[in-house]
Length: 50
Image (cartoon, rainbow, N blue to C red; front, top):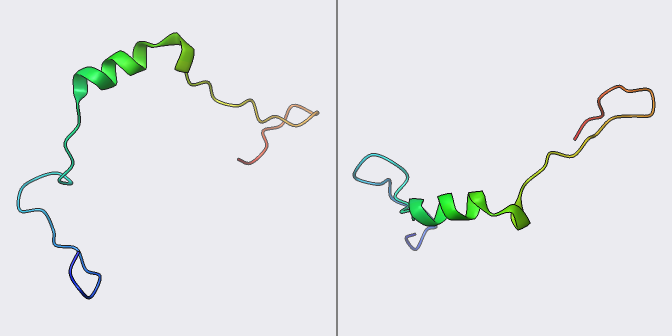
């Protein structure tokens, strides 16, 4: 970020973020941190807005 608050675009493809894919796979397999979508239904069964 420069003094005026602007950020330069990456010179190559992508967002310029590196990710540890091995760690991401390991975390994704952990059962203690498994993500479940909330069931946002109203009493009549219709779907509520998130």
